[in-house]
Image (cartoon, rainbow, N blue to C red; front, side, top):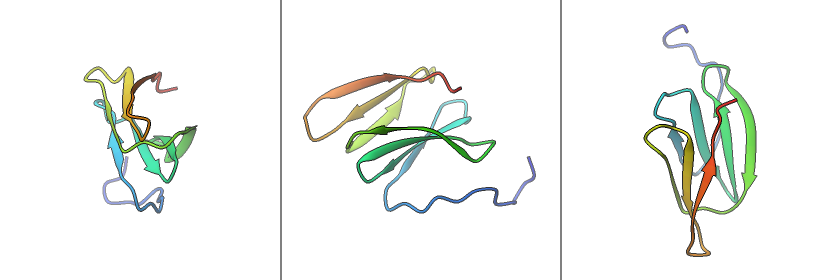
Length: 80
């Protein structure tokens, strides 16, 4: 990886959370959560769901979300 070189850019008025190993980025964009491969700068998949907050588990295998339905949801993450 070249230091200081911009390889991808995603405009968003929301926020992103990196996975503990730094390989994935979960980005909240409107009513979606997008999963990005940080090294390749490519979107892997998206979940159509509004969330007000989210966080990866310490081992990076789950993403916890909380939305306007007042429910905490756990999503399995493979990173592939």
